[in-house]
Every structure is written in structure tokens, then in C-alpha cells.
Length: 348
Image (cartoon, rainbow, N blue to C red; front, side):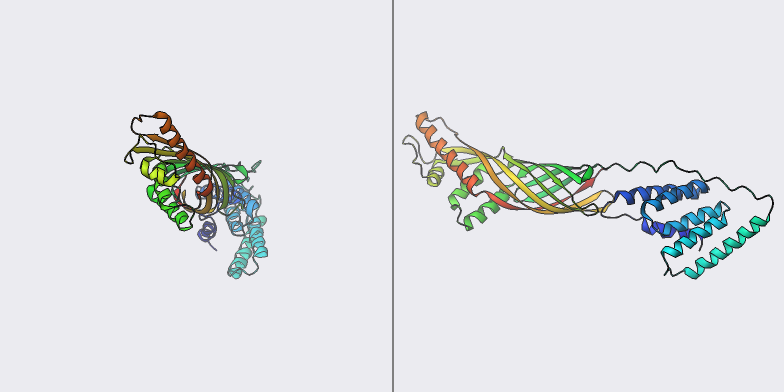
């Protein structure tokens, strides 16, 4: 068993993983420090780092590295003991015969060294008072996303100790997404197509902001769940008096023609629930998929004329009734399942 093969065994173990484990990250850092020390001839330091990595995770392959470092320190008996420890924890090792031959050769060398006087003092192995501090337990990332049928936008997320999660996203509500919501609710007979047309005018191109808190319960898995608040605002569009009257049932004031226009806009307050999975596929690159639910719990609709009415009092009654009617429609029917897909980068 040559030194190169020993290192390669541990390198296979130290490859990147999708789910991050703090003990594995600590052990990998110690291994890499030991490997660098070994390559530069600092075998005492290399042995200490390999030993700390082994104490973290008890990976049998690390015993090879300790044996190799001890052999380079001219401590063949100690190196043989590490190889015996390897055979005890992996009794079915395919290269058992080769390892046993190496042990015999090391013990023979120790016998020769013991017969020589004076015996050269072995290089001192530095003892670390304690392992290096654990890596930062905070993680920050950004993603581009679509929350169908809520928004297209971006998300910033932060994972805290104990895998608690905070996230905020912002984007806009495309008109096509409003059509998806309307198609579902019209098909379910929640409201009419005319009401759907008026709702589209009020919500299209709205700014969307969502704020979530959550938890990733499994240490080595990407599963998570979140709850939070959503806001839809700053959208809107023009609608005719005839469409508003037809939807609400409120007669058009006598001084208005059916061709008069109104600007209809709405602010929606929503509660969100989301369950999903996040993968880390290469370095900081992440993918995420989730399903959830968004429901409207409050609404403020504004209906304003884009002309100067001759009888303001009659005009105010007409627009106020239309706004109240739409508020009731939003809080009664605008509830939707949400499917999220995102890709992004974790900075640390």
C-alpha cells in the first residue's frame, strides 16, 4: 500500500455532498490541512490533523493517513498499530493481505531500530489543545424564482443556527398569472367572467412582496417548511362604468355615460404556507422546488374616475360601492395553490 493510494482513499470520501453536515465539514477541513502538511514534509502536523479528523467521524480510511505520517516520522511500530486498528474496523477489507505484509515489514524495521544504539529520538508530534472552531453556521443566498400563480421575481434567504430560516422575496404579478387564478375560480363558479375581467384590471402588474419564517428540521436533508405574509400592491388598470355596474349591480349615476373610464387598483394582504426541498448541486449553486398555498385575508380596493364628475356625491357612492364589492370578492374567493421553482447561489 503506497502513500499515494492512501491519500486517494480519503479524497474519495471528501468529495462534495448535496446536504451539508457540520461534522463532515470540520473533518474535511482538518483532512485538507493534514494533506497539505504531509505534502510539504511536516509529518507531525499532518498526523495531528488526520487524528482530529478521525475523532470527528471515525472514517477508517483516515487510519491509513495516520499510519503513513507515522512511518515518515520513523515510528514504524506506531504506524503498524494504526494499520491493525484499520483491520479491526474493516475486517473484510479487500487488501487485507497487503496490509498485513506492510505491518510485518514495519515491525521488522522497528526491531532493527531498537537494536541500534543510541536510538534516534522521533520527531515530536504537536498536540493541538483543541480542534479548530466549527465553521460558520449561518448561510446566505439569493435566487431567481417563479411562484405560480403569484409572482416572478427574486428571493433572499438566510439560514440561522438550528436551521431556522428567514426569507423575503419581491417581484411582480404578470397578467397571465391573474388569468390562471381567474380561470380556476370562474370554472369553479366562484364568480363570473365579468368579475374576472374587473379583477384582472385591478391586479395586473402588481408589485409582490413576501416575508417568510421557517425551519429545516432534518440536519442532512434539504426539506423545509415556511409560513409568512404576502402583499400585492401598486398594480391596476382602466375599466368602464358599464363593466363596473354590470359586475356590482350598482346603477350608473344619471349624469354618467356608459363610456366613462375608471382606474381600478387593489392592495391584497395574504397568508402563505410553503413546503419544499432545496438542493446544492455544485459549490454554491442551489435549486429549489416547493408547493404551498396563498390566501387573501384583507383587501383595500380603490376605484377612481379618470374624468371630472358633475355630481361628486353620486360619483362617490358608485365608486365606494364598487370598491367594497371587490374587497368582499377578494377575501371570499382569492385563495390559490402555489407551485415554486427557483435557482440561485449560496454565498456562504
